[in-house]
Amino acid sequence: MPLKQYLLAAYRTVPRRSQRHLRLVVLALALISVLDLVALVLVLGITALGSASEEDRLKPIPGFVRTPLSDVGISSPNAVVSTLGIVVVLLFVGKGVLAAGVLRRVMRFLARQEAALTSGLMAKLMRAPLTFHLPRRYIDVMTDITVGSEALLMKAVAPVVLIAAELVLVAMLTVGLLLLAPLVALGSLLYFTVVLTVLNRWIGTRARRAGEVDVDTTRSGMIVIQWALGGFREVVTRGVSDHFVDRVSDIRSRGAASRAEVAYLNILPRYFLESALVLGMAFAFAIQLPFVGFSGAVSGLALFAVTGFRLLPSLQRLQSSAALIRSGQPFGERALALQGQLDEALAVEARAARDEPELDVELELTQGVALEGVGFRYDGADRDALTDVSVLMPAGRMTAVVGSSGSGKSTLVDILLGLLPPSAGEVRVDGLPLRGVRRQWLSLVGYVPQSIFLMPATIRDNVALGVPHDTDTDQRVWDALRRASMDDVVRKLPGGLDFTLGDGGSGLSGGQRQRLGIARALFTGPQVLILDEATSALDVETEARITETLTQLEGLTKIVVAHRLSTVREADQVLFFREGYLVAHGTFDEVGAAVPDFARQVELSGLTSERVGP
Image (cartoon, rainbow, N blue to C red; front, side, top):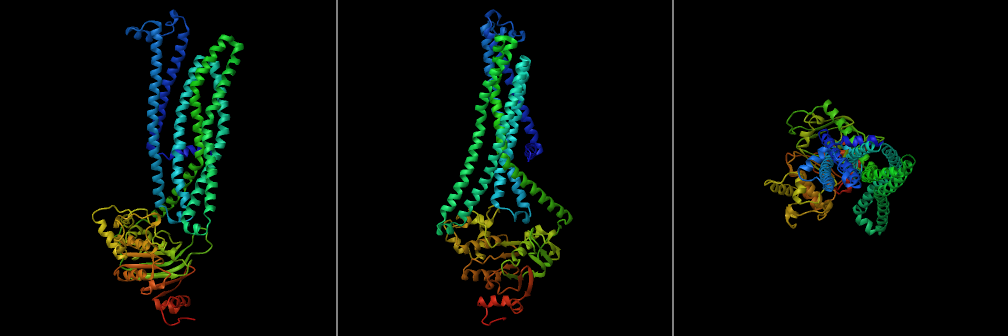
């Protein structure tokens, strides 16, 4: 992305009402720069007065300056010059204090904007459809949201604000120099323009390249660390820890080298510009000498030196800010790309919502969930994950969904949850299109995934999952734990509901984690319970207790995806899927009689003493 386009896009991430604040900050810094110019002019004037004879020192001072000083008893030449010197000191100190105060406010302001941008991206992510999330790695998204947001605000907008303020100061100093010594001013302007252009091109290219390496190594390092920790048991038992350590070491070494390069490029302008200033002084002296003589050349040299040494910090900050922008640009571009993709995905959702507006109805499942010719194909897939599925899942009954891996069971669950819109057909809830009652439908649903997400938080927080804690919460949590056959386990934990889990639910067994997930689903008092392989890690005894619990939940509509047929033996209806097709549905025995594959699974599970099917 071209630099100008990138900076404009970064600026637009700041809300319109806040952009005015940034413009006021630049104006304030520009006004502070006026104090710089006044102080510099006074320094030059005092220098000239100090070199004049005592009787001539007051002659160049305007009457509007001498008269007030005389009125307060300051009339001698030395006293007047000393007083002006004190004024200069106060101007520089006052300017520094004001500038520091303004910069502190603007940095805090931009930090708040960064937090707001991160929160905004997170909010959009949580509203984005499941199809947006499926092809993405969470590590990439986390990096884009956090590091990318920081790059946009603190490494793009903030440096631009500083650059704008410094340019105002440079312009004012240049104008002042033009009035005092036009030839020296023009020469200085041309000289430093060439120096900065060359320096910026050289540093900008290297800073951008270093930033790209930093992006790559940051993401890659986090991914390898995630692999190693996620597969800790296998990695250690196979004795391949050194492989992952070496990979992380190599990646982080390259990343450290790129960050060292950025740090070097940030401090390089200081030494380069100091050398350039000295060369410029020699150049200015040599240029003037033939035209104004030695004395005039020395005066011009002094003027160039005073102005140059005042400009030097500004030029250094200009160049360092430019390098900072370039090094952060790769991160910022990724955040902008994510924001654009999110906006596009949400715009598609908004158009679909306009075409199918939400129905203003109260929903209480009394009939059931009907699939009418439902089909679905993932982006880039060469065949449908589901094809022409038509079936009714009656309210208040238990429907089991079985089939081998890849048969479309999990896709069906995502469609029932409203996370995936069917590519064909329609899902109806009590005769109403799911698209129109999705919000009301989800308020009725409790969902238990195969892999339970658990936070490093208390048992209470994991079961309530975002519900504020009040006096009623604990009772509801205990009730959900009891129904999930988990209350006895929690009572034995140190602190009970206040027991804090580790990452991924460490501190609990696999079966206990899944029961905690079931308790979470039951916490809201759902009318519909959807379990996606939720009993796969349970021991036989616990599975039997959960199955019994599910059976006893009268009036609850249950949709259970399972590999273990013992879990669904008592289901009112069994749906058997193969390669995306609903091959058969009916009672457990009816499906066993109709589908030889299912019959073999029944026999292998020991659920019948007779051999069923060929």
